[in-house]
Image (tube, rainbow, N blue to C red; front, side, top):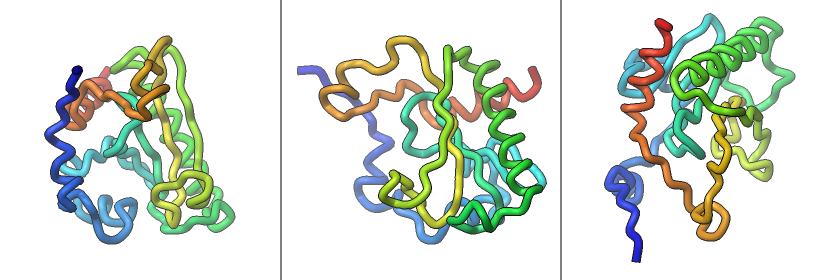
Length: 160
């Protein structure tokens, strides 16, 4: 029998990983970018690592404005959010050399939004063959790199 070790998940399973409030509001106000894995800040939005990634380097871009409705975002907020989506693609390309990307927004819980009350964009790097039997059969994703390692790799790519 094969075993996959993910000891970092125990905190989440035991309840320590459950957060209160909106992380997209809390993280920018805490000023702990490294601890919260905030990769970069813009004027109206920021880039953050997804704590439950689909693949290495899975990023999210969220506006500072707390809303579930795209129509409530100003033109400047939308432009800054999309500029940071482009910046995310460039950082991931420099750090990981992916062959493609999935970029999307899940609006509403039924659409798959884990945090349904704050609009955010997912940027998921993709490689040929990155969907293996674990995801297809076991509904399990194998993420071979810790969030701290991903954060450090992206930090290095910022200067490239």
